[in-house]
Length: 407
Image 1 (spheres, rainbow, N blue to C red):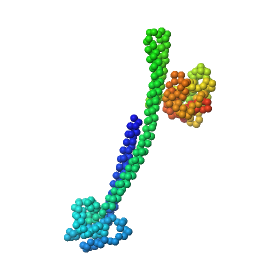
Image 2 (cartoon, rainbow, N blue to C red):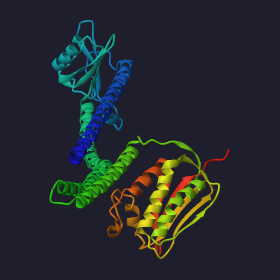
Image 3 (tube, rainbow, N blue to C red):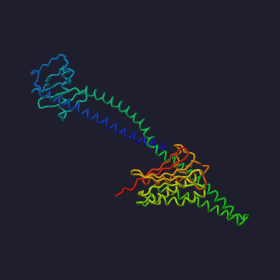
Image 4 (spheres, helix red, strand yellow):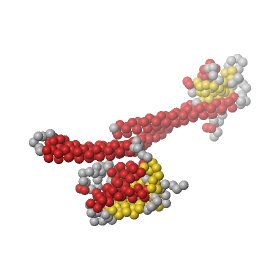
């Protein structure tokens, strides 16, 4: 799929580049041709106002070459006398000795209905006035345009190749986020399938044994409990997946309001104190008062619960878990720290990935590796920040929110 996407991007980009280059080269050639033709016609009009060099029928002598000749466009001026004969005035740049040729050229020009036109077979442009016919050689113009076309095509081809190389790198750069999302999606499906496979296997196995008459009622009751326990685990996983999906799609229901964040944190600690006590752990808190934020109270409380539950599961029991809430400037920061092997910087970033567990050996079977992903989604939905740091002998999770502006 990604290869097809990149190929389509390259084709699209190069189609646009080709059209733009063709339009640019075509426009340059068109307007250059018009400009040269207009300059030639202006010169011919000036020539038509020039006084005749010789009033008789003799051909004018070829003027000597001088440095200004190469600045002039070769031209001749013809007139018909009362007898219908062609009189040539000027012609220093043309061989006017062939009267038959001169007559053919004049006939071709006078046969045209146009005042200004071109005689292709002789590479001449003509201008007809009331009393004369001005002719200019356009061989130089054609040569100049051919050279311009050649140079434009060479430059255009080089530019096209350059854009082709750039488009390949650009296509890779544009599809990089899609590739990352695609890989994450595949990993997510694999991890979710793995998490669902274990409870499903347990349920199926216990259901088969439950249907076997060889087992006693007491054993069957135990099988039923196993089925119920695994079903609850699967429901918890599905609910977590649905919550993540809702946050990804922006369909998660939220009710934003002003809240006393200090009180919310204090209330969230109370249910965890007996859990810490049962594990022989301590929970210390330092909560600054009168901190107000704007958000969904239930969602924010879920973030606090996730951080405290994470600390309860993965912190060492020989040191207290510390929770601190403070405010500074226009922001407030909640930190939860617990003693343990400090995570590396890559682990501190990876810990928020779905189904990621830094310590697989301490998984109690009820954790899916989705809690911190859910917490990150909630915090980002509140325009906040969440991150983890590994310190000397502990790990610290930080959550930052904007304070509610005072009226």
